[in-house]
Image (cartoon, rainbow, N blue to C red):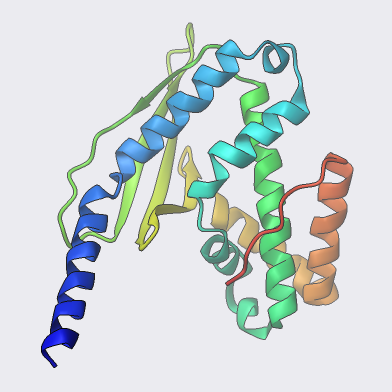
Length: 211
């Protein structure tokens, strides 16, 4: 029993260190955005319009900070429970690929805008937060507001929704997905997403994990 208690205590100590070392959500959003912008400014190919290289950058730097399982579950809504494991895997993968391309298009339009992330006050018990970002463009009086909603996981803070100018990305897709499912079922939605992604680019993207 004494040895068992020591092992448990050791695990708790390691967990405490992991929590202490976890990057704060506002720092995560700010540092990720700044890192991507820095690379875009310095990479001649991306500045020249190399969409595939930018897509790879978004895929590697931004999307690992997203919880695609939860995002897809929220977007699919009540139909998620009706989906088989294989259908859930396909939905998460295709939704992820869709968002990779969405972010790629957004950064293709980047023209030296300033990105400002507001610091947050985080209580120890907080496990969901909203990080507010403003995208400021020279000569444009009104900044674009982008709110990131994040959930604390064992692996760190993960984004599960993005709200742009008050419009939730997850909620926007929910209506579209529901209409497609009502018309042609879950397989029909999967096919629609696959076709849309295939038309958007011939680049092969990494398979998402639905577990």
